[in-house]
Length: 191
Image (tube, rainbow, N blue to C red; front, side, top):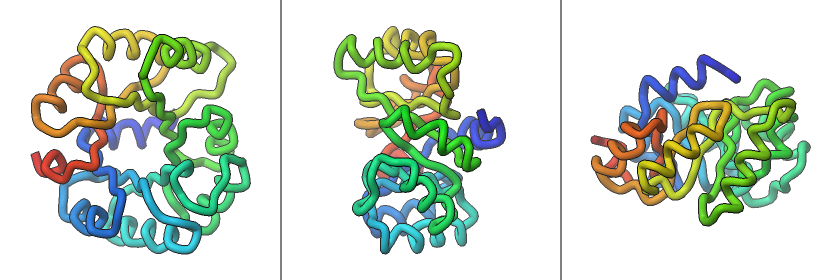
């Protein structure tokens, strides 16, 4: 686990997740020190990362959402060498080992839609399985007892994302064990 990255997230627990250029522009005026990039393609992603770095922020690329990339190790090589991003976000556990080899920070996303998601989380948290720096569960507005259950399953810190649209949603996640929240909602970035 990259302790410096986790501490950065813990110190500033509202993460701006951007899905377009306007969101990126606005996120760079917020206090978010980590920016999740949820858009772009292989031609635009290097410049998006550069804009975030120029603003003194940490750039995390959701590799699954970048047009022109596949869910293979070579995509991570591209992120590392051609964008110089600080890390990746992915729903693919198989990408975590290579990302760690490259020295990238890692966030593994899980969509908690049913009990199968929890089973997959448990499988991913077994000893011997390379761990991401953070696990993010979506939607982030789930019940407090479910947040606590996810936290008990994970071997790394957990964060909440998705559908968090107000201070109550942020406080629910943080007070029940999440170390941070990510959101595309600019109102939350400026709480």
